[in-house]
Image (cartoon, rainbow, N blue to C red; front, side, top):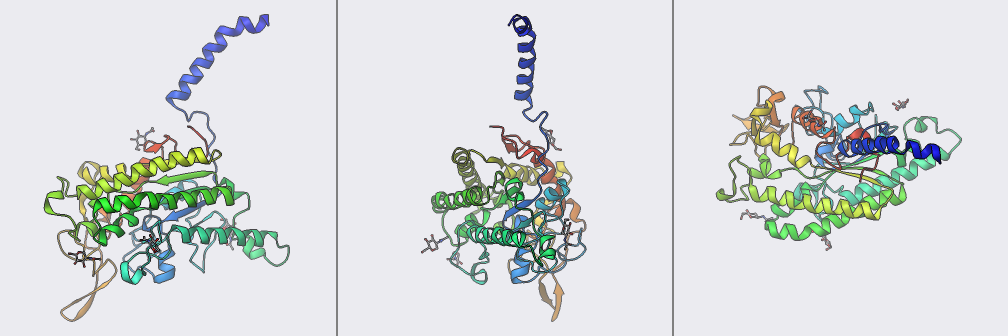
Length: 392
Ligand SMILES: *[C@@H]1O[C@H](CO)[C@@H](O)[C@H](O)[C@H]1NC(C)=O
Ligand SMILES: *[C@@H]1O[C@H](CO)[C@@H](O)[C@H](O)[C@H]1NC(C)=O
Ligand SMILES: *[C@@H]1O[C@H](CO)[C@@H](O)[C@H](O)[C@H]1NC(C)=O
Ligand SMILES: *[C@@H]1O[C@H](CO)[C@@H](O)[C@H](O)[C@H]1NC(C)=O
């Protein structure tokens, strides 16, 4: 008693500074999470081969800056999800739809280009949207989990399969990453819905998003979630080229303001949804990442950041944005009766923001990754390596 009373003041002093330190930097003294696996869900922003496996490879010059051949990515090289895997010293994620050469020991990728959260009721051929909407990605993940359980439970001749799948405990220790929603918004706009009509569908879209997070929490005991918000698609050539907006809606950066407002409307609701999930899933750590602001800064301050022509596609064909929806990157165009590959038109993709009119270049993806990795665009401000620790 006596002893502790005499120590009261200094102990409180130390506690005070510890607390202050926690407030100033909540991440001090936290062990990195050592995620054994990453399970990713999303659209083309994080597709490492899904759509290519199902509907045919996106041909050259995709992949040329890093893989030196097409690698299932709509990019000249790596995506943000690739930089995330590398930062954990994990291999690149295999697409779950890739039947050969895949190794799922450290995770799996369920994302496909053109994926939406809600099923679209149209075929890829009709609308360009993937049949692998988020609910389907969840069915695939749940089936994956069940097959892993069966493989690990068998004592006999399953050796090869055992070296290709995660451990059972990895499902609760993994990082679950999400980058999806942009296509739900553009799907509405491309059907000529007004921005207000699309806004009215956002609660249903986010309700379906929520269901999938809860399923992973309840069925696979997923605990760490890293959720990207949606980007400023009003600045992307494939949206600008459709001329869905009137001239007065183009802002001083050349982007369609009302479409970016729609993206931000979705993002605010997504953030509210994340808050609800934190209450409903008390054992989960959910980080919301404001990728929108990073991409918007890159596009609107491209020169200052070492990039040029942020609204022009590097690989494309013609027009103000070097983009033509009928003649895409890697496609063929007839010139004087000869088939010519729609290839890389820009001299140097390392200074370009946009790759093919829809997707970012590897250089842009690296720039984006470098800004989100340390948590400065996250809520709470958790670096990705600490995304298993609760801070709210
Ligand atoms: C698809 O059809 C179902 C059933 O009619 C409907 O409830 C759903 O909203 C539709 N999805 C979209 C994205 O329009
Ligand atoms: C799959 O990857 C893991 C970890 O990188 C490795 O130990 C295992 O041998 C690989 N399996 C095969 C069949 O290559
Ligand atoms: C949307 O409007 C444009 C221009 O009026 C029209 O060409 C196009 O067919 C419409 N699209 C749909 C899906 O109705
Ligand atoms: C995070 O990284 C960015 C870019 O490298 C840097 O500008 C920023 O100050 C860093 N923030 C923190 C909190 O470390």
